[in-house]
Length: 303
Image 1 (tube, helix red, strand yellow):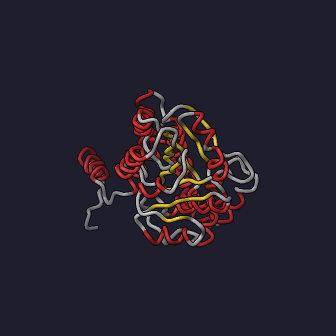
Image 2: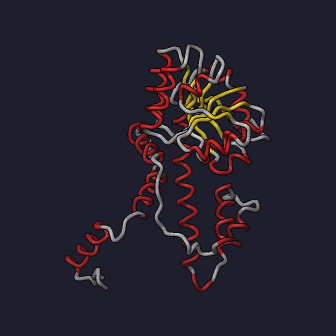
Image 3: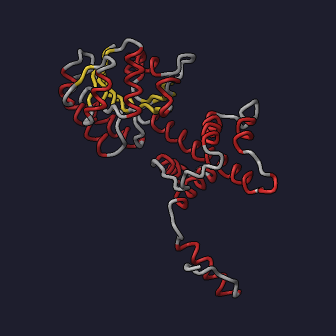
């Protein structure tokens, strides 16, 4: 099957390579010529624009968009919808807001173009391990493009799932990432407690590896933690500054909109906010109030 791939950075590049390895023909476009050239050396066809990608494909065409969420996705999807014909398909495999995907699907369908939103999980390990995919949109379009999804899914399982109408694929991925926030925070707190018991002098890496052997809390996240602790037993080379991609925020927004409590995910998101603050005002306010009502000792900023 021949398809176009828009955005061949690290994840999009790995996805393209996996498709090439399975015999698919892929036409690639990215502003980064080095990323394009790397994939051309592995069998992909280069293109100079969205129009060039479309021009190199035969109907019915499929173009996968793998770019950061926001304006760049909007421009890529809208540009492709204008260039494609009835029966063609645009797949957004990035972390777009599901509401934006619903709107983009309406615009595409009005012009006769199918739009699929594919939640894509697997990160930098997807080339070797495959990707977990949750796809929303037309069932017919999903079935037509199933060879692509099957190639990207893990070799030992059918790790792609049609989940429902437009927007549902990205909604499921959003909740997936919210759960990820909570799991990561729980591991982080647990290992901090282990390290804090200094009189035991616990080996965090050995404990983490032990927990991967049949424990009820074993997971791929824990496997990755083992790898990191082997390289740096107390993670001294890292800062505690932690970014968020936006998916956690959207998950908390959905919790409020639907009236469904999600305290663990919400707390995990708030902890990421706190990690990016240096001597925040909130903490200083707490110190000031304790000093004000009880004369409790405070630590000055110059101490």
